[in-house]
Length: 89
Image (tube, rainbow, N blue to C red; front, side, top):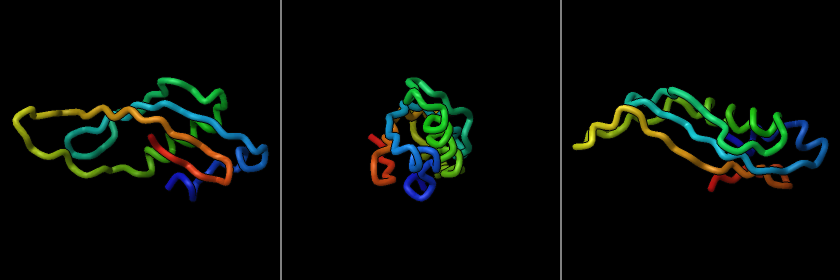
């Protein structure tokens, strides 16, 4: 999703950057929230990373286990790289 939706402004201006996000996914796979923990310094890259996470929803349902997790928080770094590549780490 991210490579296909690489921000047009980043392409035009040849800008890259990293965004640290936390996504909260409910048990049923829907998104509860997305929080930018560390900005790339470019609003359009931060918004594009959020959009990629939103477009991926709904996510698979959380498995039943002994912990009964209601909301899973996933923190990842999204790297917008030259050549219109998005990589998560």
